[in-house]
Amino acid sequence: MSSQNHKTIRSTAVFDLTAPAGVRTPVGVELRYDSREPYAVNISFRAGMSGQVDWLIARDLLADGLVIASGEGDVQIIPQPDDHELVVIALSSPSGQATFEAPAAELAEFLNETYDVVAPGDENHWMSFDEELSRLLQNDMH
Image (cartoon, rainbow, N blue to C red):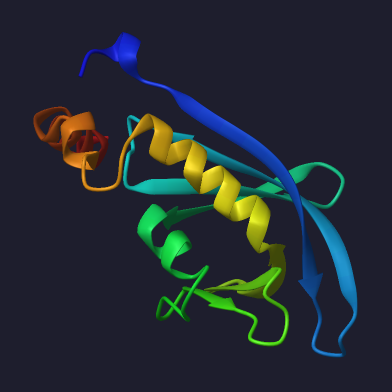
């Protein structure tokens, strides 16, 4: 695909950060999908007054998590059996853990928009493995 065919989809949402005591804090997020990285969705969480935390999540994992508990380790996405309008997104890193409740309908709508750009199964047609390998090797050299 030529670069003029590439497209970026962006959507904003509010996820609830859930604390162990059941306290919920709304957090603004931006979901971003770029056809140059067709297998991934970037989720940017607004952290505090001036920062953001970015997570790159497999698009398939996000889609699977809408219907069945998915993921292992650092990212888990789990539909709520008692509330089909919510999905739990649990993130874990060396610096900490966070659990969010996200609106399932908004995630599904965002994913549908990404499928309009790159259909499931067509991801390999949207990236150049030679370019990716070259980029990775350049980054390793610096």
